[in-house]
Amino acid sequence: MAEYSVLMEKEGRIHVIEVTDATVKHKGLGVINTAALLDGMSIGDEVLVGQKYLTIMPSNLPELISGMARRAQTISSKDAGFFISKLGIGVGDTVLEAGLGSGGLSLHLAKVLGNSGCLVTTEPRDEHAEVGLLNLERAEDCFEEFPKHIHLEGLVEDVVPDMEFDAIILDMPVHAPAITACSPNLKFGGRIACYAPTTSQLESCWKACEESGLTVEWAGELMERQWGLTSKGGMRPVNGPFGHTAFLIVAQRR
Image 1 (cartoon, helix red, strand yellow):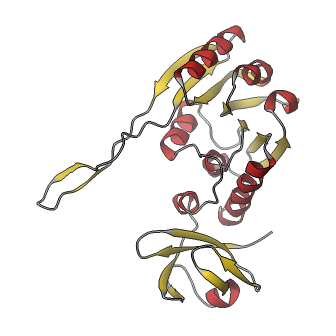
Image 2 (spheres, rainbow, N blue to C red):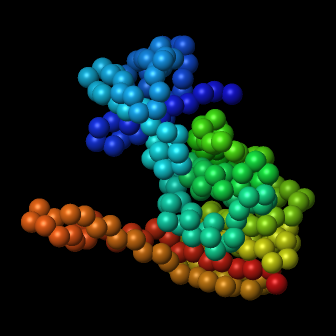
């Protein structure tokens, strides 16, 4: 397995780099031999790369999220935290996530499942799965504990494995076929959640959950607004869009 390290620029930009003896190009850093660069260095030390001073940071979840490789849009930390809490996901659980995308949600799930947990991911698009699996590889090297991980290629309704799940999370363009196919694999008392970009998709998820014998517990959106210091003292909301990402729904097998 590859070894990774986290470097932070002074303005806060994060780089998650593979530590290797090869001299290769790293996006935003140039051509470097990372093993030679980091030899004898430890967390908190500064290293000079070109004209940039970078600090070696702990490989924690926020740093891995900030520096993750990206292709597909990722589920934000606020939505990932809501899913983990609302679905009751924790150590030792078996969780199905479809689709994997760039793996933003997967990193949050891997962090809380621990060595005794199991994460099953599915993704029909190889170009997205390649990025998501890279991010999970980084996390496996950096986290002290990491769950058993099973990845399946294809639409989840076509490849859902014959096993029971404590929780299921669906992030895809069309949810209804996946809800129908996956809900029989949900343990009694287990919950399924969907991430839906539009209200019409949210409505479709609600109806599919009810048709599959599930009880809808919650549906809606989470709003996020950042605040900052003002030049004349005090604080106010930071200029920018209101933090809407998608519509969420949670249903339980009862």
